[in-house]
Image 1 (cartoon, one colour):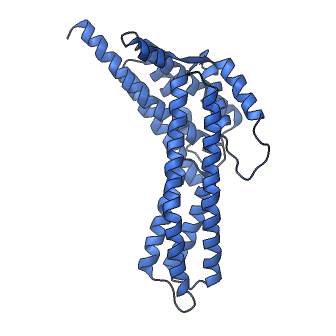
Image 2 (tube, one colour; image 1 turned 45 degrees about the vertical axis):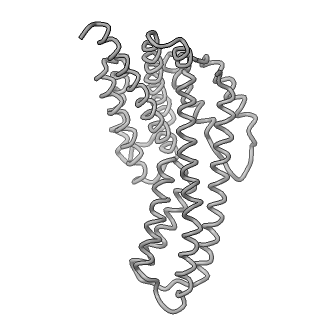
Image 3 (cartoon, helix red, strand yellow; image 1 turned 90 degrees about the vertical axis):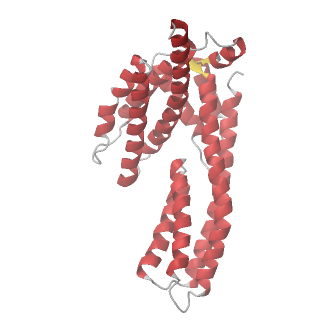
Length: 311
């Protein structure tokens, strides 16, 4: 293989790696954001495992394509992540800062790797991939945007704060510029996940309400059919799982509680008063509306962040 062909092949490998690495970093940031909220032990362990797996994949792939600085920054973080698997180990503010610094170093390395692969591409493609914004400029704009957000409201989102944390991590890593395409891709992935979740909720909740109505119709005389209940429990479990994937904390808590309630009925074959079913149906309707508002608020914040970025 000629030197030119080898160089071109290496560039292609790095391009694929950078794309995958950005996805892993997004998953790590989402998990870390939820980990700060001090979740229950089982959820905490799952979040730590998500971070650990993402770092292991990222570091291994970086080593494979000979990006030693990224591999080193990634693997040096794993021992600390291992410690977090201990339920007694609390994540302090200093720990979060240290992790953000490490993730910032990784992001900076990815930006350098991306810049190194554009020389042989078209001018248009290179210009698109090389578009950056000064970290200090972006942070100032993000803080101003955050200050303009309503101080109160039924739906609270932390999209802007999450982006601020990511950019501050890049700054602590020593980089003076942020890759615009990377930020836009991260925002787009988060938005696509939330839109898909809302679509599932809007499809499933009316059907769940109908099923609860059927269960309620026989509640006064007998325990509900196990076969019918299993269907409902499975549908709620899917909603709970999907909410976890996008870190929708309110939806996670609601669908987890509903799952526990229905599982208890299924396992103990108890008779539940019709009024209880009425209350659950009402909560389902309210939750579906709240989730829609939650998604729309996130969409608005991502659009506002995107407007700060150069094209």
